[in-house]
Every structure is written in C-alpha cells, then in structure tokens.
Length: 142
Length: 311
Ligand SMILES: [Zn+2]
Image (cartoon, rainbow over all chains, first blue to last red):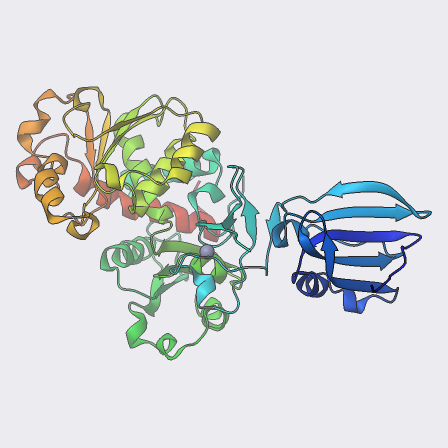
C-alpha cells in the first residue's frame, strides 16, 4: 500500500468524500502554496469506505470556511510537534460569493456580468443564503 | 441627518427619522406648492425605464417639473439603445453626466442596486421586478400621515395577492418599523406572504399578524385597508378562482361595518378589486393617494439633490 508519512506541523483535512479532494484542492488554491502539500485519493476508511485526505505542511494561515459548503463530513486536524493539537469542526460560512448562483431567474445577477451576488446565511436551520441583489433565498446543495 | 447624494434602492436604506423627514417635507410642499416651484431650477431628472410604467414615470416627471427642473430619458428599453445589450454599468456611466438625479425602473430584481454602484448622482429605484418599489411605499406613507396625523398604533389590513405583490412587501416591511402597528393579512391560502417575510416581520420587529381568508371577517377593527389586484393566473385552478374572487372585491355593501375613518388605499391601477360604487365613499382615498405621490417624490428628489430652500 502507498505510504505517506505524517507531518510534523501543519493542517490535515481528513474524511473528504472520495472524489471531492481535487475540488477542494482547487477551491483552496493549494497549488499556489510553496510548502509541501499532498492530496491522497481513494484511501480506505472505516467511516466512509473510501476517502480523500489533504495534508499541508507548515502552512497554518489558510481560510477554511469554504469547506463547510463543499463537504460536511470533513474533519480538520491542526498538527504541531507530530501531534494533533486541535480538532476543528467545519462551519457553514456566514457570507459567501462566487461559489454558486442566485436561483431567482428574475435576478439581475443571472444576466449581468457586473453583478456578483454576495450571499448571507439566513439563520433558519437550513443552508439558505439571501442574495444581496434580489434578496431571494437560495438553498445550497453540493 | 443629511440625505444629500444618497440613493434610494430599498425603503430600509433610510432610517425612520429620514423617512419622516421626507414625508413631512412632502406635506409642506403639498400645502404650499408655489413656494417650491423653482427649488430645482437647472436640475435634470434622468428617467431610465427599462419597462414601461406610465404612472410611475409621469409622477416622477410631474414632480421634477413642479420644482422648476427638466427631464430626459427613455420610457421603454425596446425603443432605446439599451436594447442592443449595453450593460447597465455603461448606460449609467453616461447618464450620470447627462442628469443630476436618476430614476430607474427595471424588470430585473436588483438592477437598481447594481446601477447605484456605478452612479455618481443619486439614483432612485422606480420598481425592480417583484422586488422593491420604495417610492410607492413613500406614497402610501405620506397618505397615511396626511389622514391619520401619525404613523403609529394602527391596524393595517392588506387584501389580495400577498405572495407576489411587491408594493405589499415593501409597505409591510417598512410599516413594521413604526410603533404600534399590527397587520391583518387577507388572501387565499395559496397567496399568503412569503415565509421569509413573515419571519422577518414577526420575529425581528415583533409585530402581530392575523391571517384571514375573507375580507369581511375583520373589517370592523381595521384602520387602513390596502387593496391590491389579484390576478386570475395566480390561482391554481379555475374553480378556486370563481369561488374565491368575490371574497377579495371591495364593494359598498361590505363597507357597512367598517370604521367611519378607515382609509381605503390602492397602489393603482385597479382592475375590479374595488367596485366603482366605492369611489364616492369618503373613506376611498386611492386617487388622492396618487396625487400625494407626486409631492413625496418632490420631497425625495429635492432632498437627495440637497437643493437650497426646502427646509
Ligand atoms: Zn438574486
């Protein structure tokens, strides 16, 4: 079996649904980092059967809020001195833009390239976002 | 409190005090129009109507002309250069050099907000799709203020299509910010207000809402009855339409139990939701409402322009 050693210090994004790893790699712009990064795909997992994992060495200052919308199964481990120092739950972001489109067909964002909606999470228990232009709610789905 | 240079896209852009300031100025202008007949001399209103709305456009034009200003613009996107796919941003970049203040009507929801991001002069939303129509809301508010003296402690009923009616949504949201307001919402079950709006009114502003399916049920307690059109195609089937349509038509007969000083308002144009026999009832104020709409637009434009002599 393919072996990849642990990291001494950095971030481990674990329990990514198999096949989503590359998408997350791109969304987080990890190809732009200068520190070592590994993307493991189709690793066997007790919980998921198969999973993807991303390990980022050294780099701790990374905005991970977007993960909450991509894959709710994800767990994040912050590693220091070869130990998991912190397990972080992913959260659903309060504000997002650029990830999805407003579902309202009458919204100006559907026809005008100048208009990019900023979405604000509506606190109603569902993952629904209010469009900054038309105020209609869009439910986010993977 | 300085509104000079500001845009009006959503009634919530203005504080209650700012709304009151405009309404009070509108009433002063209504009482004494000569005093204000030249306050906008030399100013140009640009009207950008991407869909026709004669009533709104003429109300704005009248307002500017009554203050000594002039107007230019287009009244239908099909007959203007914007039809050929010019972006809103580019149109605004030119128009804000041609005019001192702009009003935009657009079928797309959020278009005036986008336009305001490119405009160097004040821009007023003249209605965007089913979203907002803030100057209709100002028109409604000035009428309530004129007849009730104060916009507070009123039971306001809305009747008709409450799901799609943009004037209703705008007014509901704005009125719920005033003290002591409660609502009676009269509509078929399929056309009740959207969930997110109800949630906002009840939870954020703590306003009491009664929902009813018949106009007569609560009529005797109501201070203001706001009628709206109910379109046949909004009903799910013909049978429901035939059965229900009369429940949402106001006739003289139904008014017998209503308060003596109740106001009957309507954003106009009406189709058949208010019978003609109601027109000469002293409580029918919808035509005067349209007249006051010109004065509140005068107050709004002169305030956003920051012209002298309006205090
Ligand atoms: Zn939208």
